[in-house]
Image 1 (cartoon, rainbow, N blue to C red):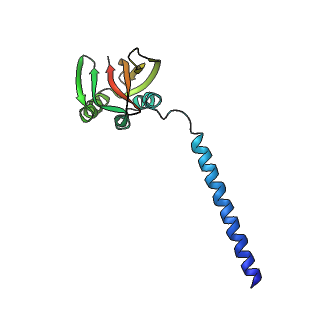
Image 2: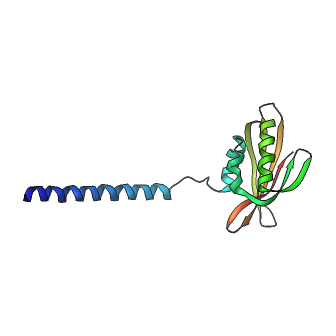
Image 3: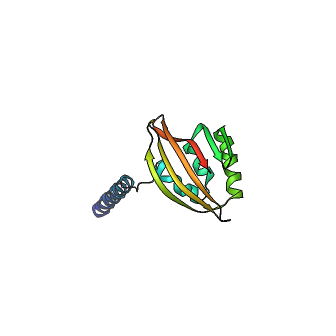
Length: 143
């Protein structure tokens, strides 16, 4: 009986050690997650893949959208419809980030070229401003 009890204690200790090691590795990997989780870092890939739903969390509740020659201020839900329609009409083939910077008014911006599968290219500008500790899109232009 004493041997059974000792085996159970050893097994319990081994399980505790394994669990602790897994928790330590998971915590370390989470701390070393690659950059690219901010709106500025994620937006180029979201544009390239036409992931308008993935863009929604990064859109301000009201924003300005310019699609070719049409410009308007809209809500996030209106922007979703506009982006979906735009990407259906102009499916992206590629997005090339040309410049990333800061504006004099405290915002940040991305400039690039979106190329559609039809061969049309759009000069793309996205302007972000911080709101409640998060960078949100306040202006999105495809010209």
